[in-house]
Image 1 (tube, rainbow, N blue to C red):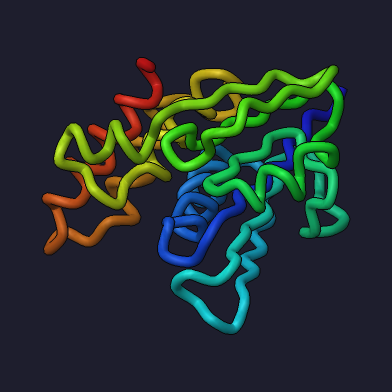
Image 2: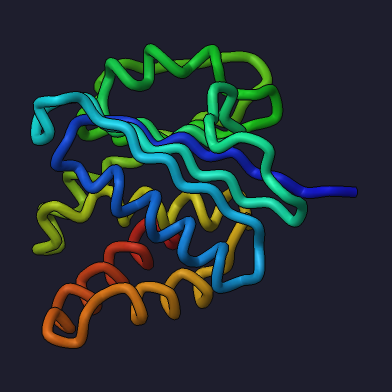
Length: 178
């Protein structure tokens, strides 16, 4: 049976939404999957709305648009509220509970809050809450492996920014082990 996972990453510009999507898409590509990556952001850039649709599949993808995600990553309350009821039954919602104080629930989906922004701050990984959440998503969904994402990041992050690679991997591992 064909396996397709539609992922929507949503939040404010500057939260690493597009980089998270790019990491997922690149890793899927390296794993031999069919991939689509569709970034979308408001004209404001930093501080405005941002979201990124990623589809990973073992069959060709008809459309890059993800309107009913299997996995929702919500980095702020407006994004969680907007897409909570759009997430497919049987899907996953992972949100940053440092930024979203509201308890949320919905029948038919697994919802996990992870204090990613606080964890990033506590571990000198400011700005990497997105990678912490990505680690949690990888652990929960098994759509990609931890080793696959680490290997992809090593290829995505330029050698002159090696310190960023180490921090990104540390952040992913924190989320994975949360």
